[in-house]
Image (cartoon, rainbow, N blue to C red; front, side, top):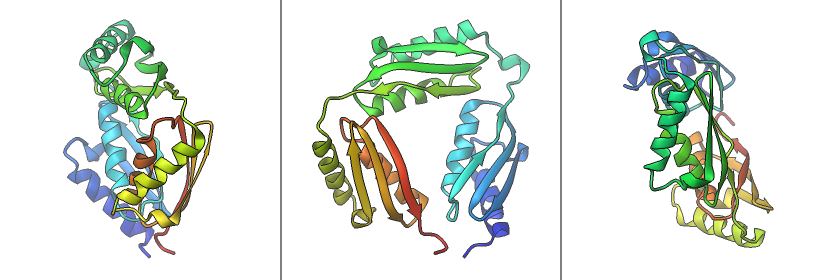
Length: 219
């Protein structure tokens, strides 16, 4: 089993290896597989990149993310300017039904609302705006609505997992209720956990995923 000190060091090294992150301003602590990130970054995109880098490290079971976004004075934008740019970038993104998405900006925090038929559309909308200059946070409240029977959703998720050789589908239980999917079972690492979630999100009719999967590291 990896020690807390080793895990901390591995996370620090991964952050230093990530070119999108200035690791010098990020503090890292680790305890029982839970990694806490503190400090500050100069953009919301850098904050997202830092969290993604930590998820790649073997032994990380959970992340407590306390990084603050502190924009340099020359990179600060007014809320109405951010909102206008967010609307424009969504309009030009073919993967997003922009006519069904509303944008609100307050103190640099972008809130997205509305409804879409697919989870990838919700994800793409959030991804599109989080890279904009001046954004310090993104709250994605877009709802996924698709009238697909629960049994069909469950069957399609099991089939998606079975097709992916990188996942152990036999160790995963899927429960579906009105578009809300609950995943249970044991997975080998964080990467496999993300693959299983991605497979579940790829099925039409999924509006929410409750991840109750357990990581087997150290067991």
